[in-house]
Length: 166
Image (cartoon, rainbow, N blue to C red; front, side):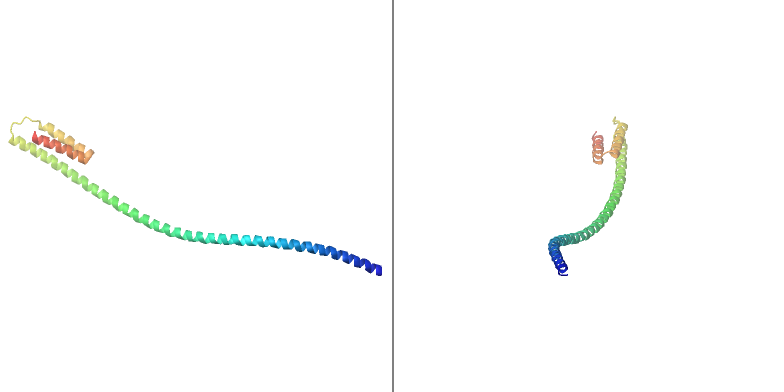
Protein backbone atom coordinates (compact mmCIF):
# COMPACT_ATOMS: atom_id res chain seq x y z
CA UNK A 1 0.00 0.00 0.00
CA UNK A 2 2.90 2.31 0.77
CA UNK A 3 4.35 1.72 -2.63
CA UNK A 4 0.99 2.42 -4.18
CA UNK A 5 0.68 5.60 -2.19
CA UNK A 6 4.26 6.53 -3.08
CA UNK A 7 3.40 6.02 -6.81
CA UNK A 8 0.28 8.14 -6.47
CA UNK A 9 2.31 10.80 -4.66
CA UNK A 10 4.96 10.84 -7.40
CA UNK A 11 2.26 10.96 -10.03
CA UNK A 12 0.46 13.83 -8.25
CA UNK A 13 3.80 15.67 -7.90
CA UNK A 14 4.52 15.13 -11.60
CA UNK A 15 0.99 16.28 -12.53
CA UNK A 16 1.43 19.28 -10.22
CA UNK A 17 4.67 20.24 -11.95
CA UNK A 18 3.03 19.86 -15.40
CA UNK A 19 -0.10 21.73 -14.29
CA UNK A 20 2.06 24.48 -12.77
CA UNK A 21 3.95 24.81 -16.06
CA UNK A 22 0.67 24.86 -18.07
CA UNK A 23 -0.75 27.37 -15.57
CA UNK A 24 2.33 29.61 -15.98
CA UNK A 25 2.15 29.38 -19.79
CA UNK A 26 -1.60 30.13 -19.71
CA UNK A 27 -1.06 33.11 -17.41
CA UNK A 28 1.67 34.45 -19.72
CA UNK A 29 -0.59 34.02 -22.75
CA UNK A 30 -3.51 35.66 -20.92
CA UNK A 31 -1.38 38.61 -19.83
CA UNK A 32 -0.02 39.17 -23.35
CA UNK A 33 -3.45 38.59 -24.82
CA UNK A 34 -5.05 40.99 -22.34
CA UNK A 35 -2.40 43.63 -23.13
CA UNK A 36 -2.96 43.21 -26.88
CA UNK A 37 -6.73 43.30 -26.43
CA UNK A 38 -6.51 46.42 -24.28
CA UNK A 39 -4.29 48.11 -26.89
CA UNK A 40 -6.73 47.10 -29.60
CA UNK A 41 -9.68 48.40 -27.55
CA UNK A 42 -7.84 51.67 -26.87
CA UNK A 43 -7.13 52.09 -30.60
CA UNK A 44 -10.75 51.30 -31.44
CA UNK A 45 -11.99 53.80 -28.82
CA UNK A 46 -9.63 56.43 -30.22
CA UNK A 47 -10.87 55.73 -33.78
CA UNK A 48 -14.45 55.86 -32.49
CA UNK A 49 -13.79 59.32 -30.98
CA UNK A 50 -12.24 60.50 -34.25
CA UNK A 51 -15.22 59.23 -36.22
CA UNK A 52 -17.68 60.82 -33.79
CA UNK A 53 -15.86 64.16 -34.09
CA UNK A 54 -15.80 63.86 -37.88
CA UNK A 55 -19.48 62.99 -37.90
CA UNK A 56 -20.37 65.98 -35.70
CA UNK A 57 -18.34 68.32 -37.93
CA UNK A 58 -20.00 66.83 -41.02
CA UNK A 59 -23.48 67.28 -39.55
CA UNK A 60 -22.69 70.91 -38.73
CA UNK A 61 -21.26 71.44 -42.21
CA UNK A 62 -24.31 69.85 -43.78
CA UNK A 63 -26.64 72.09 -41.78
CA UNK A 64 -24.61 75.14 -42.79
CA UNK A 65 -24.70 74.12 -46.45
CA UNK A 66 -28.45 73.48 -46.32
CA UNK A 67 -28.99 77.00 -44.95
CA UNK A 68 -26.70 78.42 -47.64
CA UNK A 69 -28.51 76.42 -50.33
CA UNK A 70 -31.89 77.71 -49.16
CA UNK A 71 -30.58 81.28 -49.19
CA UNK A 72 -29.12 80.85 -52.67
CA UNK A 73 -32.37 79.36 -53.99
CA UNK A 74 -34.29 82.36 -52.63
CA UNK A 75 -31.76 84.73 -54.16
CA UNK A 76 -31.97 82.91 -57.49
CA UNK A 77 -35.76 83.13 -57.49
CA UNK A 78 -35.55 86.86 -56.75
CA UNK A 79 -32.98 87.40 -59.52
CA UNK A 80 -35.05 85.41 -62.04
CA UNK A 81 -38.11 87.48 -61.18
CA UNK A 82 -36.07 90.66 -61.63
CA UNK A 83 -34.76 89.37 -64.96
CA UNK A 84 -38.31 88.68 -66.15
CA UNK A 85 -39.37 92.19 -65.13
CA UNK A 86 -36.38 93.67 -66.97
CA UNK A 87 -37.19 91.63 -70.09
CA UNK A 88 -40.79 92.84 -69.99
CA UNK A 89 -39.69 96.44 -69.54
CA UNK A 90 -37.12 96.14 -72.35
CA UNK A 91 -39.75 94.68 -74.69
CA UNK A 92 -42.17 97.48 -73.81
CA UNK A 93 -39.52 100.16 -74.34
CA UNK A 94 -38.48 98.51 -77.63
CA UNK A 95 -42.06 98.60 -78.87
CA UNK A 96 -42.37 102.25 -77.84
CA UNK A 97 -39.11 103.06 -79.63
CA UNK A 98 -40.22 101.36 -82.85
CA UNK A 99 -43.55 103.17 -82.74
CA UNK A 100 -41.77 106.48 -82.19
CA UNK A 101 -39.35 105.66 -85.00
CA UNK A 102 -42.23 105.00 -87.41
CA UNK A 103 -43.83 108.31 -86.44
CA UNK A 104 -40.53 110.14 -87.00
CA UNK A 105 -40.08 108.55 -90.42
CA UNK A 106 -43.62 109.51 -91.36
CA UNK A 107 -42.97 113.07 -90.19
CA UNK A 108 -39.73 113.23 -92.24
CA UNK A 109 -41.56 111.92 -95.28
CA UNK A 110 -44.38 114.43 -94.78
CA UNK A 111 -41.92 117.29 -94.35
CA UNK A 112 -40.05 116.22 -97.48
CA UNK A 113 -43.28 116.16 -99.46
CA UNK A 114 -44.28 119.53 -98.02
CA UNK A 115 -40.91 120.98 -99.00
CA UNK A 116 -41.32 119.66 -102.52
CA UNK A 117 -44.77 121.20 -102.78
CA UNK A 118 -43.51 124.52 -101.40
CA UNK A 119 -40.52 124.51 -103.75
CA UNK A 120 -42.62 123.75 -106.76
CA UNK A 121 -45.06 126.46 -105.75
CA UNK A 122 -42.53 129.20 -104.90
CA UNK A 123 -39.57 128.39 -107.10
CA UNK A 124 -41.52 127.85 -110.22
CA UNK A 125 -39.32 126.49 -112.93
CA UNK A 126 -36.74 124.68 -110.85
CA UNK A 127 -35.15 121.95 -112.95
CA UNK A 128 -34.28 119.67 -110.03
CA UNK A 129 -35.44 116.11 -110.07
CA UNK A 130 -37.75 115.86 -107.06
CA UNK A 131 -38.79 112.33 -107.97
CA UNK A 132 -35.16 111.20 -107.67
CA UNK A 133 -34.82 113.00 -104.33
CA UNK A 134 -38.02 111.38 -103.09
CA UNK A 135 -36.76 107.96 -104.19
CA UNK A 136 -33.46 108.61 -102.38
CA UNK A 137 -35.34 109.61 -99.21
CA UNK A 138 -37.49 106.47 -99.46
CA UNK A 139 -34.31 104.41 -99.80
CA UNK A 140 -32.88 106.16 -96.74
CA UNK A 141 -36.09 105.37 -94.89
CA UNK A 142 -35.75 101.69 -95.79
CA UNK A 143 -32.10 101.71 -94.69
CA UNK A 144 -33.14 103.28 -91.40
CA UNK A 145 -35.79 100.67 -90.74
CA UNK A 146 -33.45 97.78 -91.51
CA UNK A 147 -30.20 99.07 -90.06
CA UNK A 148 -28.67 101.23 -87.38
CA UNK A 149 -31.07 104.02 -86.33
CA UNK A 150 -28.30 106.57 -85.66
CA UNK A 151 -26.72 105.90 -89.04
CA UNK A 152 -30.13 106.11 -90.77
CA UNK A 153 -30.89 109.45 -89.06
CA UNK A 154 -27.55 110.79 -90.26
CA UNK A 155 -28.21 109.67 -93.86
CA UNK A 156 -31.74 111.13 -93.91
CA UNK A 157 -30.49 114.35 -92.31
CA UNK A 158 -27.69 114.70 -94.87
CA UNK A 159 -30.00 114.07 -97.80
CA UNK A 160 -32.64 116.42 -96.41
CA UNK A 161 -30.03 119.14 -95.90
CA UNK A 162 -28.65 118.56 -99.41
CA UNK A 163 -32.11 118.81 -100.91
CA UNK A 164 -32.81 122.04 -98.99
CA UNK A 165 -29.49 123.61 -99.96
CA UNK A 166 -29.66 122.40 -103.57
